[in-house]
Length: 590
Image 1: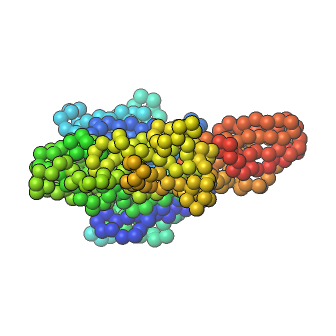
Image 2: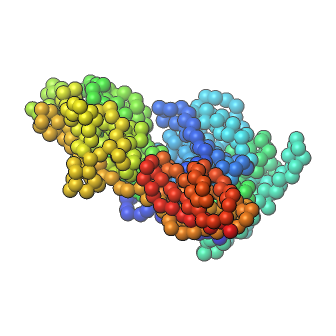
Image 3: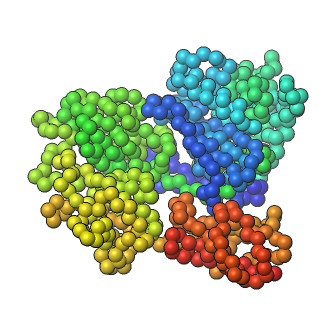
């Protein structure tokens, strides 16, 4: 990991601007969607919902627990931690808690009731902070190391240099509660100072400005002479002195720009992953500024309406609204607040409306969308004033089995070979039973084609007639909603061809080679080839297969499978999506 470079840019937390966040991890090949991962959600539907991501490597190894956002006004920590939830690992494991204190993150406050990082010595269960800490303690007990990501004040220095750079500051330091620890039960000695200084050497090698270098910050927390007795109630102290695992606080300076803090946190996490021999299998992850695409809202349990940013929702006093879904360019950290009602996060919670207000949508504490709510002046029915002709508000589809709501006129960008199922439409008039959904170019029932295509699983690589596509080129198709041959709404499906970008093979137990389509690799007698990764533009490599042919053999190469050539000669590995060949690479057996 030590020879890579990371570069980070991020959106601001207070004012919008066109900044982008890029996180480039240190290996050259892409994520293999073959590593196991899981998601756990606790306290769902509350303001303090807690999400835990477990990332399991292809090979066993140590486990690091990464906690971000335990104090909600430290975005460098929780935005950095969030990047690791999507990771794929070759070896070892991660447990990632990006937003330990989501309520305080949404409010952009250090704490709500009590400081969550001062609750680990407690055994009571009277607040939501206590409940979350109880779960974090269990996660600590399942780990080999804890990294708690923080943004701290000023710049730590062993000697007093200035008001902002002195021993009382936290920023740009790796904090431990002692220099070394002898485990009470096993007698093993853990050198926290040695680990921290090894990580610091790796971090500082990537930081050009020596004024921003990291330093080891020994809090000597158990000592009577410590400057920081309050840390005896912290997560790191609990991890070390109760669970016997090394634990560190990685503190970046709040005096630095947010994108720099995230970058430095990433350097720190990567350094400790290297120490614990946890090997990533991930390339760059590109994260744009948060943008709400639309909300799906129900009024009085009628059919839902799709509302884009700044669309107005009209209801009657006493109507009940429920926000069913937020569609944005992120999946995590989203909340919707019906201001003046309910809780700080009203997603999935019915709320009775009595006065004008607005729905504020946030990604963490960043406002990324708003929908005004107006109270109708007269006793108009429901959320919209009905028109003589019903208007299509949304199309409801399933793409590869995943449900999506798309506004009227939208474009759905998918890869040829993906499956599409038409489910329903939403209208301003409520019921849609007399409205047909017609995927132009698809015939569901050849004997009786009435243009109603709901319920069919449409394979976009074999079930569509090219001549019915727009411009007859097979790239863009229409889905229309009709009533008695009158078009009420339409959307478009844009198809891109699946592409094989490159593959990665491991030769024997050492060298790894990246091959582009058409290239050749040489395999010598006794060597085994292992297919490490396939990089395509297909989401999660859905329905991608690899077939080996040559010297009278033909067999599928399993994911992470080993190729052992039984005869000398030329072989070819062809990569397919369904029945479509994407490209091949050659193997020469010597």
